[in-house]
Length: 322
Image (cartoon, rainbow, N blue to C red; front, top):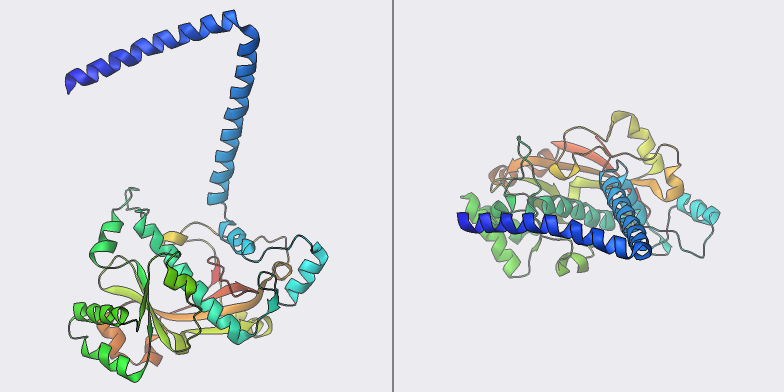
């Protein structure tokens, strides 16, 4: 092993001496070609640096989530900016070429909210969670070990409620119960945004539970669709806006810790955002036994957020009102 390292170092040293010499000889023999080669290399280098800086700025930009939302309802090429902004203020969804009712937006917003959970989960699957020392944690292993880092969607009916309660004596039995429901196509599990069942699901059901499970085997966030989420229009939101603060910085879920802002110099309604809002209440870090045992109306008062929507029902991941 030591001999291999020594040989490798020797070869690299030899090349480091040989290559500059050959390059110098070529430059002396071909000054014109050398000039063009250097110009091309400089342009490639500058272009590569520019693309890298652009990518770095875009990913670290405080407007990242805002830019991602705007992409979901783009301006058609054959429409003037004036018409685009006017119809945006009226609540028009250009992507789908229609105006949505609040009920229609509710189903779309629930799917988008689930997409936000899946987005967060991907940080765990990709081992992007950082520990106190700034080092990445091997979270993907825990995702696999505990069948976590996924979102469960469980349609509710009396038989299913009873089935889940009967499997609650041990926490592992609860998850086995959900596995049985999934096996019999009576519940769904979403891992990635590309999962076919997530892509094809229109979230048209009204009565179901969403369980957002990270890499921990016990703790999770629970959303009960009947009372977790409400669509507000702009007028309804204005009546309760004073009770909330806009949360764009500070500690948050691992995928959303960076500062996120909305451009202050624009009218967001003209960009098709802020005509509708999604109010969400859910149980944060509640254990499975507590979830089944508690009255649902009491369970879902732990955390409350209001997300901005675009006219197509897509959730702005951050900032949100809290």
